[in-house]
Length: 117
Image (cartoon, rainbow, N blue to C red; front, side, top):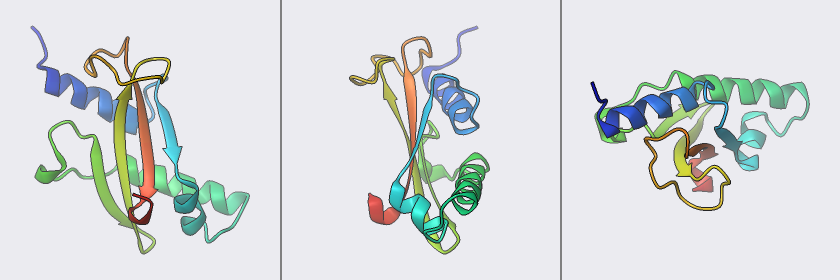
């Protein structure tokens, strides 16, 4: 039985969001991390990053978010946070030819404040 393309992309995106894709990259904008950590460093920054990634993992998708679960927006500590998953080739040089094929696609999860967009 073949899994439909959209369903396969959704599964791969969920793995990326949950930190289960060893080929994925997670990027958090400096502005986002600074605001959520109160411009703190060290442990404050680590705790802010942990809270941010936990919120991305537990995000409850809405019908308007799209079928592939590649975008979401939520509030955290009074800040509007967005996340987006993009699909690249394995060398991160250009877009993936087939986001449903994990062997040729590297996902990049970018987390940012709405102000950063």
